[in-house]
Amino acid sequence: MNKFMVAGLLAGLLLSAGAWAETAQQTRMKTCNADAGKQHLSGDARKAFMKSCLSGGATSGRKAMTQQQRMKDCNAEASGKNMKGDARKAFMKSCLSGK
Image (cartoon, rainbow, N blue to C red; front, side):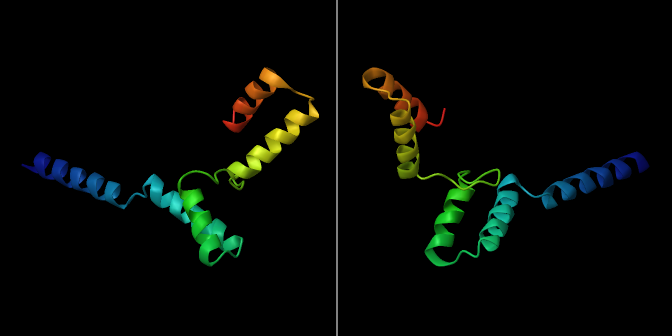
């Protein structure tokens, strides 16, 4: 009888500890919220940052690059390398996909 009681208490303790553990999404929410606070963001800017951050766009302490900014940077790099035709097209495809 005591063995069942101890096993039941142990199982209950393990289950309750799991219920209090933070999920990955909760941890991400805390981190993104803290980052938005450090940057003093509010209103639409905060909303946009949180959306990007929570989707994984602003991970590892760097801001998410917009598609427009990525296009500008890749285009400048391709121009700097004097790329033309198929080579430029292949480079742009690779660069824009983030590879």
